[in-house]
Length: 382
Image (tube, rainbow, N blue to C red; front, side, top):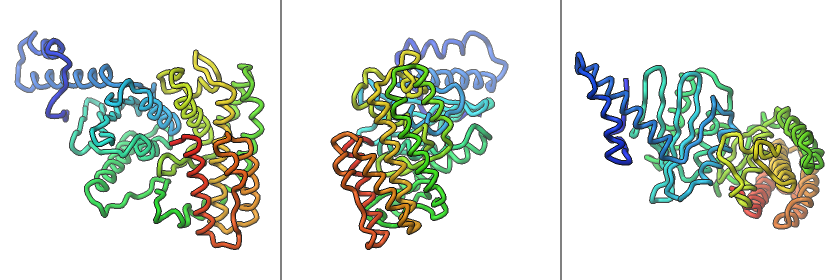
């Protein structure tokens, strides 16, 4: 079975002839046999167009959440022109997926996909087409699909279709609401509401613990010794804790290693975009200065600092939600300490960050969110 778009792109009449010529080298015993061959040729044309004529990268298997987020952000930021389409390929078991992102005239992004599973090839321009506001919206919407390791493709595809259905409903109806996928939306109406589930408050102390470990790694990541950088990366990989990452107006959970690599990637996109290489594992290699990928000691250090700040704000948010003033006060003091080491564009504001604990939690949370947003803006982060 095959579902194809009403039209297929060809770069030239010569390429179209190359695709269709094999249809006529033999006689067919039935119309169905001819159709099967036509289907095969059209699938080939669609795949070739996507892989050869868009800004394309692929994974050798199923990416994790951090890998997908980094690869998509990197792919989009390194397009040759603003009109260039971008595609990420990956597999889940024996099923091959292609996620396509196309900029449109409205400044938003058209999204389509293909799915090739057990002889079934799907391109669904109607039910599979949605619009993302920007690449941050795309990352926040799609990356939760990769939160768990590779598993049942039927379950993965079901979750994927649910995401598409929710996004389409939101576009088509001004009253539609999108159920949160372990993230929340920040807006003027929700900025002072309790942000996270109270059940998450048991993460306060682990967040503080891992933030201190990151702080102790600064001397290690400032080194240019390959063994030291490899050791630092191995330490990151052992950190089995997820914190909150803000991308645009969305918050999503991401493991600590993913946060560090995400920030390293963003720093390099802002400062040395010419040094970035295509490939799903670029940030991992750049952190370790291996395989021709490089980063500076300052870039690696700041990636740790930005992650530390995110973790501290996350833990403070939890403490305020739980009305845990003791830990909240410790976290405010720690934010001031880390802020003193941050770039000058934000260090003063973080060193002066404080909360009035005679005020209610809504007022305190509002102050926290304002400061976190100011930090993102000052550091030129999405």
